[in-house]
Length: 264
Image (cartoon, rainbow, N blue to C red; front, side):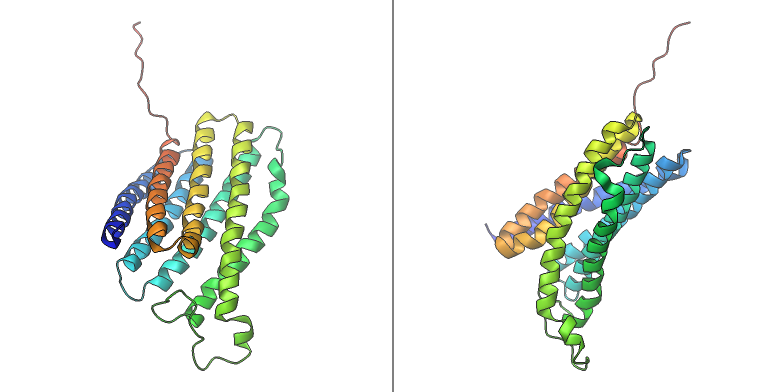
């Protein structure tokens, strides 16, 4: 497949996703201001924040694949920030879901598992966010460039291209495992709440979060094992499916139907 066709497909998917995300951000903010329930308000505002982060990540990723210089490092760091934000949003949503359970059951022991999950996600992501500017050239070619001159020698023991590559792979694989576990908590937890509207929203949100992490983490792994063409084609499909699930997640927060008028 010609590289031009591959890039056109990828850029088109980014454009469609960007339009959808802008609509979702506007819609979520509007819903958040109008909802009376604090649970619904917080879900809408958190949703808008996640969508804004995803939008910026897709924007800089598209610029990088369009051969715009000096943006690869920003795109990588935005993907890490998005992972952190999505994890916090998912965690807070699960806690709300557990409280709405009449018996307050600790679904899949999440209250206990969330602490090591936080440590695993944040430790790896913050390490890479701090390390990338030190180890990467401005263009961040692969983000595994030599250390900048003038750094103390002891820094290279902890911050070096080899360490970065190991932490990156561990973070990506760990994210897939942790968010897969999150999705399982969503599936089981939603069966234990009675609010049908929130139940539908949480199911779509759980699927959306899982697809987002597969798109981010899977994209990096695909580029390593499959190559550029396969990475971009698969990412284009994943981005479109992810955008659709996010759309369904937000729209499921509102019930839109026809009103029946009964004759008196």
